[in-house]
Image 1 (cartoon, rainbow, N blue to C red):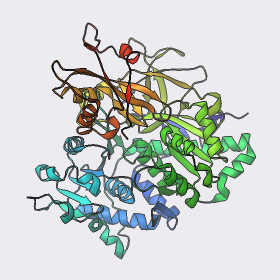
Image 2: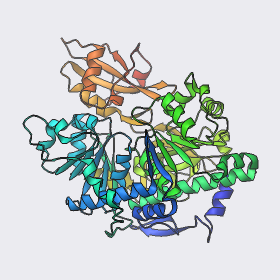
Image 3: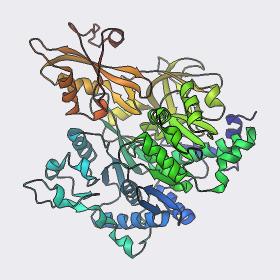
Image 4: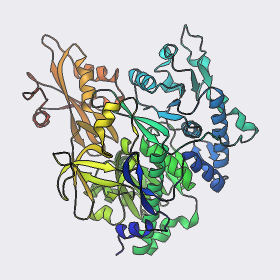
Length: 583
């Protein structure tokens, strides 16, 4: 039986496609690919040459080829430069998954500017914070999300222009505003109608900043994790390595299944459901799909199992990489058997070890799946740092897999060094994948990346075969449907309500979402507040996925230790729960 480790050793050997070597980067010795792109623009240029007339994006009735897409992206690059966007400037995007999101990404990074992917579920306060913290010069937005901040745009002196994807400026100009900052997105790509203006030629180094994505903050405010061209290209090549290694592994161990999975040389088609403001959606699905010549089948609007299954059937989807929550929803959809899912040969997901029941459901729903892939990573690691494929996905289902070729894993010991094999402690990652740091937060960066090691906040151990086991989270965090929810952010929000004296947020297990958010409330003396009012308060300040599904009112003071820390282990085992779905 050929193993993943065998294939990894073969592919990364000297002279091979994924040859690895070592380089010193910012004073830290790293494992790198010997042959790699120097900037993301090189990926785009290769893609247009290799895949030009193939369909790239399918979105509702729109079908966009690679040539059409990059003609528009290049026109947009030129228009952004004409509007004063220079290398290093920030361009924010606030929109649902759509072709315009992808155009904004490529047109921005190809001129050396920095794409800021704002969370599309954020509220007014959160969006304004992201814009101000990043100092964005330009915002691209769809109407639904722009309307959350429309009344505040004139007060943002640093924000010079807003380009609206799906409406005219007059439709959303607030009363009393002259609307001088508002423009149509279509104006940015108008030049493409007369031909492709060609790629920009701004010099770009692999260490230059490419993307800022915000991750929930343990101190109550999100932190902008900076992906460089180097880190995103490293993730791109790691992902292509996994695809190549998985195919070789399958061919060696099950030639018939490998033949079915090959698709007979047809264009690979990916069901695109991960939000583009997450590294899984942007860095992995979109950027990797660009290089690989994939057709990206995007769902319009909110994810629904029926929409996903219809796209799978209509576009003959071959691969789907997403979060476990969405996989569960499709596998549990009662009419799933009415759709043809026979073309799907690969399903990937990340975020937690995979349950045996989920593996069974996947194979029942997608009968020709040759294998599943699980992965572990963070925004700070530019997506996946480990991967679990092939027979290991069943044999080692309680793990999150083996390190990528450019990843070194470690476990921290209590004294700040590296623990021996088998010891349990905080998981550490060293790799060119790592972020450059947190935007405008040098102290947070210095406490997170120490001597080249990213301190993940996750607790685990590495077994004698090299597989990583995640056993706990040292950060006070809930993962709800693939979204990281930092408890302190909601707790800080709750105690700002004068009717609430104290509050604790804890996670409650959920079959498909992984965890749900539960609030334990200590009501202020002489006050009263209902469950609905608690939820409405959070909903008015934070994104919907942070709104507690469960609310418990605690009798007396919340338990704390001598230093004032909430004793959440006590709260997790006590009390009745009231329940109401919030999303």
